[in-house]
Length: 417
Image: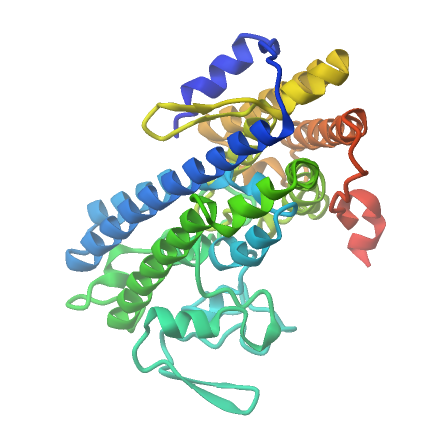
């Protein structure tokens, strides 16, 4: 996987940006424009993923399965950069769980290896909808005779259990890769293409597995069409963030801070490192976690600098939060930018290790001191930038933001209780 050239150029050129006079209202137009561009790119790459999945269903082979996997990986790059729009924007938080909910109890979806991946706390963790056209849920029967987008939507987080994930990127990831049974050893999931071959079926129920994969891809496209609408002219996301410039900037800084701290540094990185548990990595079936972490961090930098490189290489840019902070406290503005660049350097080191053959789940393994340190360095960088995000909020005269926390950072001992 190739890191986008602009991100690397930003690292190599240092932290200097040419600040420009900026009004908060103008900054929030840039913020909304970057959101729209990110979701448009996410939609375009999801449509390409859907086409690759349809090709796999039409002619299952090692080649078409690999092409679908590559399309999934490509789709993650723009989407992960939109995650800085969560937390601060209620409309995004309400929508996001449809497309990026994790971790998931994969036995709800398809076959698993023995007890691996089952969850005693979830009565549906081994329900296997692909093998069972009807499911009993809380005393009622759910009809999944045909696996459609509507059925997947009804099943998503069914019974109020967040691990009952049936839609989005990670459900598709599991279907394409299957379980990663390698623990913290080398290797990702290894689902055979014949699991989708109705004429030469392995794994059983190949016709229903194909139905599920096609329905999940359809639903991902539909959900991303909704996201594009939210940030288009007149859309709820754009309208809410631009209605009140002061409140809008709080939304923007809150998204940066909460993704930096509680979500990425905490739940996605520190928790897995504390437990040395590959089940806690973000893309646990595909071993693509290093890329997702990198682009989450890049998305935070995009919001601060008011820049986004689109999939086609064009740039969306304009007045930024950096500009606003620079007017009030130039040293702090540059210090936060330096923090963001330092985080990208630490994320680049994780990417380099993964692409050299040591995947993220191996980096967090017990006994891998060097790998553990690479991950801890990135966590430390994310925490450091969060502190300066909070200082920047104060510098521009906003009310303090509420940054999402994580037990793994705030109370590590509780993780083991």
